[in-house]
Image (cartoon, rainbow over all chains, first blue to last red; front, side, top):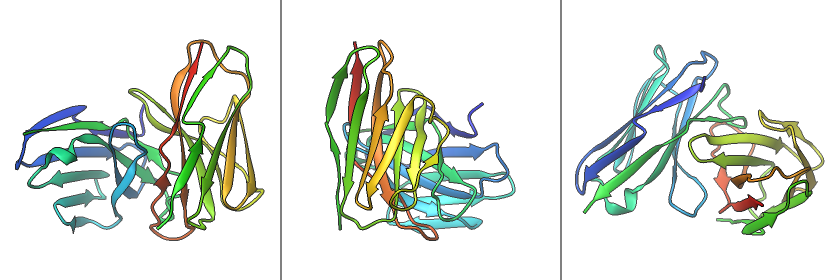
Length: 112
Length: 113
C-alpha cells in the first residue's frame, strides 16, 4: 500500500478557477510534507513545504495541514494554463526532508 | 542559483547490459539523490549520499550501484538492465538542514530493448 496517497488522480479546471488537491499519509511517522510540481519533460520543482497545523500561503498556492489526520491539501487560486502539470505530495519523518516518500501524483489540466 | 546536469538525456540499452548515468550539481549542496520515476508509481528513492564517499540505500536499491566521487557529482549504475524496462531516472540535491527542498535535474530516460 502506498504510504502517501493522493487524490484525485486527475483534475480539470477552467482558467481562473480553483484547483484543490489532496494528500494523506498512512504512516504516523510522516509529519513533514512538501508539494512538488512537474511539467512535461522536466524534473519536479518544489512549490512549498508545510510542517505545522493550519494554512501556509505562497502567492496563488495555499497548503493546509491537519497533523491529527495526516492530511494535507493544496489549493491553486486563479489557475493559469502554465499550472497544467503533475503535482506530487511528498512526506518525511524528519524536517530535513532527506528521505522523502512521494505519492503517485495528481495531473492537473487548466482549460483556457 | 544553480543547476543540475544529467547525462545522457536518453539511454537505450540491451537486456543484461550494465548502464551508467551521471549527475553534476553546482549548488554546492551536501546531499544528492537518485530516484526512479515510473508512470503511475510516483518517484521512488534508489540511493542518496549526504557527503562525498557516503552512500545510503533507498527503498529501491536492489539492481543498482551508486558512487559519490566528489561533492558535485553522483553516478548511478544499472547493474543488469531488464528487457522492456522503461523509466526516467531523476537526480536531485539539497542542503543538509531543516526544511531544505530538493532540486531536481531534467532526468535520463531509459529504454531497454
